[in-house]
Length: 114
Length: 118
Image 1: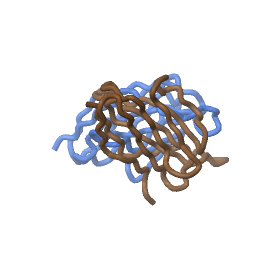
Image 2: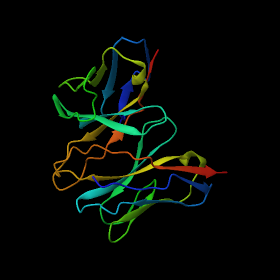
Image 3: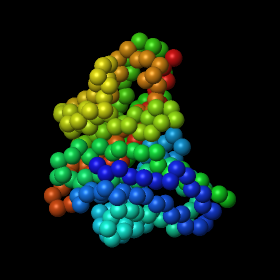
Image 4: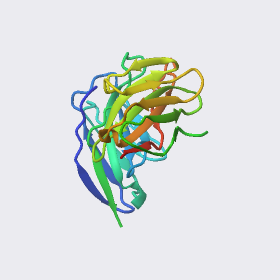
């Protein structure tokens, strides 16, 4: 699975959009980009994932560059409860023969400020 | 639809005792993963199981740790003769059986079991 690189920390004002970047320059064609977050001491929470196209759900939007070497997670209106460590993970999709174990890096600590 | 359930949420053991951690996957999920998070560290994969089979145990310590996912009942992570270094949060995740034509391996995590070894 491709290695991902994220900034260690970011701040965001409450009510503003939070844009969290992730670099995955060695990603292969069958690897998806997944985002999870971990709010202090809780279990990781799935946010969103994508392969090539941009994706949106009720929690966030995922923008993947055309060359797939980087992506951005967007929380459109950050709240204090969005303060968490956000993890970007590249993982082979189903049928790829891999065991789909998630390899967590150090992530980005997003601090939403009032 | 209930999420992944883990129990106990907190477990205290003395050195040398056994710890048993339980994980009930989401309904319809037949894949279970265990991860460990040591204090102030990131999550590390331990083991991946399907019903009655261990698929990948590359992250399991070689001794004292074992895992099972029987045909009936929850998945169990068992730690024998616990030591202080086993103190950590243990998270279980589950995912559905992959379906053809789509990617359905999203893993959903439980709340974790916090093991403290005295």
